[in-house]
Image (cartoon, rainbow, N blue to C red):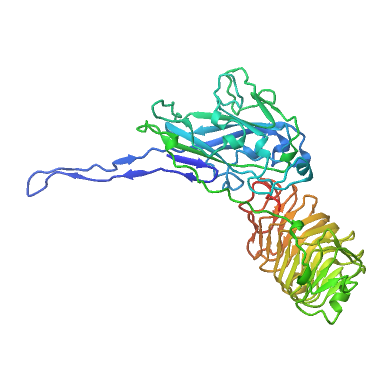
Length: 585
């Protein structure tokens, strides 16, 4: 027997060889004779279930097509089509899951059709299971809120599942639902009702046996989907089975009506696991698909959530504040400089706009009322920066910091500092090539988390200096759950990192950030660049700046497309890849 799924394959193929001799008596001077039979063999037959898929739809739903180039043309969907194979042998290196469903940018009224082909070497019973594993909310945008969406962004909270419809049938191989073809009722309907992870019979034995799948022949299952209301409209059987199949928009056997307000489903998604199982039919007449062990009943695995969520910031108040601005001091700098402010103090800054350059020269926590209400606006051009960290063990959180025109950075770490936390801020450069975030080199143990780093035609949005540029080694400078937004110049970087032992994880790089060079360049190969969204299609997303020193770990990222092209440069390990964008915090 054999099970194929998008996750695993269990195969069996064996050969038993017996080599022996049969001897008659041979004693004394009697005549004797010995005959030998060699190469006696029992050879086990194979039951190798292989599958191909031919998918049709609109090019704007095909993740292998640049969205900006999509015109709504109907045709083959390359991200969901593959030739005969096992279900874990897709992708450029034949080592990734084969996807029956990989569609992006769905709008009400979109639909698609594809046909699964099943091949076995010997007659076999077969079963299949479609398991709805996640229905992520991803984000709740304004139209969703206006439509009444109050979801908490959990893995099962998305409403797209309520607006998608599916139709499955036993097809003759032409990708068309025709009048004499049988609907697979258990898999037809909304995904929450149809994809329950139960084993369903394609052909099985029992008291009312089906005809097994025939060895050496092809069996077909057609499936259609619709974002909206699906109505069956079977086409008159024409007896034509084209090879390859050929589906046309006016001849697929169902209609899709996207009318109505589906705003509550914006940005949502669904994830489905698909499993097939085949077992010999000969000497196995009682086999039933219900006898198979159930699929794992574990809760869906929560995908990593990426990007900043500044709303989670809680400003310290009351006794948590040792110094208050402007209650105790009119300016932030005055509060830092005063002799009564000592290492370990928390300086709480009330909502307001503070037009000053701030230099943090003590080991303190500087806490604003939140990035939506507490603004630090740099005043001086040159190398200083709107806010400069010039001490160890400093925390800066809860601000919107804007660089001065002609300044070097919104926030800068000056000198070889350690123990720095930059959290829950919005850091913005200004036009002219400045940085949102900059370090001088020689830093250790720096965490940049839950920030929005925004560039305005910047040469780089964030840059961590180290040995390569200033001959001062930096280590453990981590970027976690940040948004990189805005724009950079053609040859610029969203993030340049020269720190060793850095984790660059769960960040979201906006699709407005494009570069002819790279979105991120890492100059050392012991960093980890994992679980990030590199949105937008095309261009180099990650460049290895330390050629020849080994692979840069860039696994489990979303690259803006399920099958990206030219998205890395240098020695970069990018497998496995995310099949769709990671949900946002």
